[in-house]
Amino acid sequence: MGQIIASNLTLGYRRKKVLQGIDLSIDKGEFLSIIGPSGVGKSTFLMGLNATTTVLDGHLQVMGHDLNRVGGRELKSLRARIGVIFQSYNLVARLSVLDNIAGGMLHRRPLLPALLKHYSHQQYEEIYEYMKVVGIEHEALSRCDRLSGGQKQRVAIARAIAQKPEIILADEPISSLDPISARKVMETLRQANQKYGITIVSNLHQLDYAREFCHRVIGLNGGRIVYDGPPGGLCQATVARIYEKKEPAQASDIVAGPFPSTLPLPATALN
Image (cartoon, helix red, strand yellow):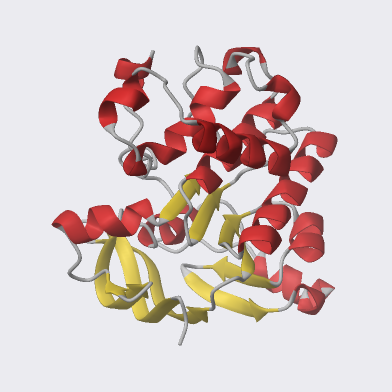
């Protein structure tokens, strides 16, 4: 049984339909990329997996939870099992790399030691392991506002891993990075996928990276899935179909607000 299952799914905002007729199953441990033109619903689908987009019709199940009716403590518990990586990093700029990564552990740490930035020996070892996985250990005590974009994104990945999630949602994680930094970030995501068995669902615009790093590619256009298969199936004709210009009346990635963080990171308290 899939870790994520969508059946005749329609997602949107209030009564506005963005994605329709979505049928797919994603297994645990997959590294999946969602591609397609801007404005076809890629971010909407990603947010739907975190229960921040309304299920207007059909069914969406994530890790055994029915997102048609999830709420309250059940929703909070679900989101604690889903890490999110943002295009804009969402780090606390004045905090160190170490403290930002530790932010991913807040949901499983007592509040007072977390606010005082007090870590046990075991927690230091755990944080250091995550820093090594993403290759940022040499910047452990550096403030995050002094890092490059690629370094910040790797800190964000380490913070997501620190949640010990079963799924990571990566929303355009390399769109603002130079090619070298982008490759390092994709290699880091692959490392997290392989080392910890975390399912990765990522929105990408870069076809080369989708082909190289992902197990599976979902192509969206017109608010619907037009391709679902291995990267090797992305021939010229298929790519043309995915990126064919369409102007559906109700397909947009424009939302009322930003992708909400799943990390219980009280920035005002930690600044």
